[in-house]
Amino acid sequence: MLGMRELRFDKHINKDVVLCVSTNHRASSSTIEALNEDSISYSLNVKKVPFYRRKEYHGASTVCVISINRNLYHRARRSLERIDPIYRRRLQLNVI
Image (cartoon, rainbow, N blue to C red; front, side, top):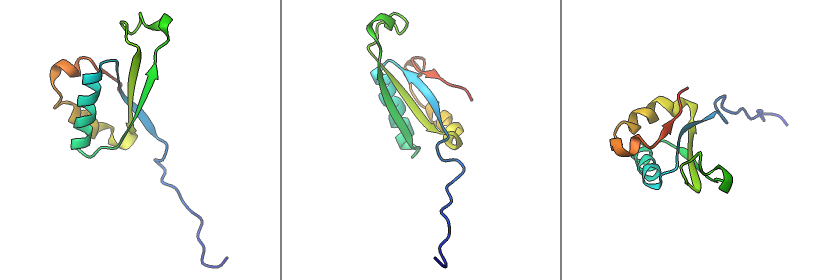
């Protein structure tokens, strides 16, 4: 077909990185609120912890994993600084 160009995708597509992991529901919800205030897109994945591994997670039955695009990582870390320190300590932040 004449005039039809091939679709090109952004080179940063599917470049998601894990921002943080938490077993605390309030810490996860305050993190999500901070990301929403700064208009940072994220994906939320809630994983069930098997019964025999709950000792590693201090008895938690679910783990919340928040992922973001690699380009938004530094912006997201700055927005997490506004979270209450009590909840921030309950997050396991990943460093790239």
